[in-house]
Image 1 (cartoon, rainbow, N blue to C red):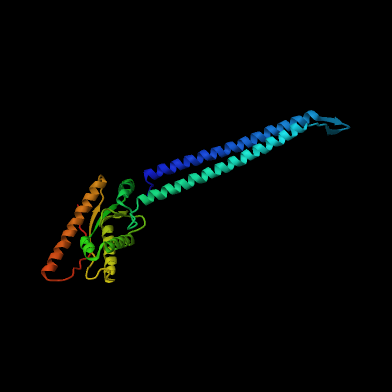
Image 2 (tube, rainbow, N blue to C red):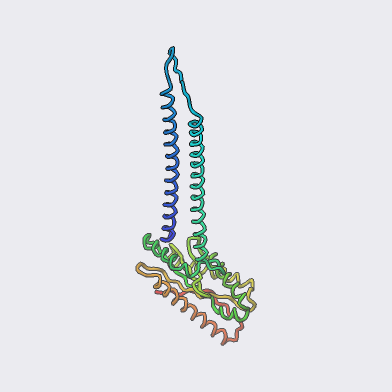
Amino acid sequence: MDAPPRQQSMLSTVSEQLMALEKRDWEVWLISAGTGIALGTGILGLLFRAAFLQHGMLHMDVAVSPDLFFGFVAVLLVYNIYAINKRLQLRRTREQVISTTIQNELVRLQSFTDPLTEVYNRRALDEIARRFISSARRTEKPLTFLMVDVDRFKDINTRFGHLMGDFVLNEVATILRGAVRGSDAVIRYGGDEFLVILCNSNFYGGQVVVNRTAGSLAEWNREEHLKDFELTFSIGIAEWADGKLLDDMLDLADRAMYSTKALHKLGTDNSQQKNSPELSTPAGTIVAD
């Protein structure tokens, strides 16, 4: 999957900054080489003027004043200090660019992460969903949206307290993450609603994820985290079709989820009519055409 436009822009900016630093590094090297050549040429010129042949041998008769000698040494010393300092400065700048980029990316990821469940938050939805849709349109691969709602979550908060409610939401996110692949996305869409985006998956692939989720949920309920209360989900599946926008898919998945919730509500009413104290309804799905 391609990087999002904002991330591509950031990487492009960092690449340009590093290239500019590389150019400055080369400039320092060229100045060093030019200075060395100039000094070397001056020395050779001085020696050439002082050279003479005698008895077939080359002799040098050079007289250099102390001021000229120490001045030459001072120039070499000052320039080497400058060159070394410039190289260190460029290295620090390069490290700072990389460090700033990493920090900015971490901040961006944190701003896109729900602190309670550690999945993507609503703020990340537009960027992530549009990236998935763009990839599906370009590759002509299927794409499926699952809208997941925790049934009777208000009752959980009322009976067991808000801390237990937070625990349940975190467990729901864990169950959903365990049911999908790393290439898919789990997003906390609202208070007790989650959105799952499945790349390269059609409606039947969505059903596989729902069944996998139901199995994990049944196992979770067997551990009796909630006394005399069985946790259930209502899940709606909507398969993306070319031409559909993000809002269209959210509406389709949402309507499918509410249809499933109505079936669960009907099951609750029937159960109450039979004076059954418990409800055990598996996670279900309904297709949004």
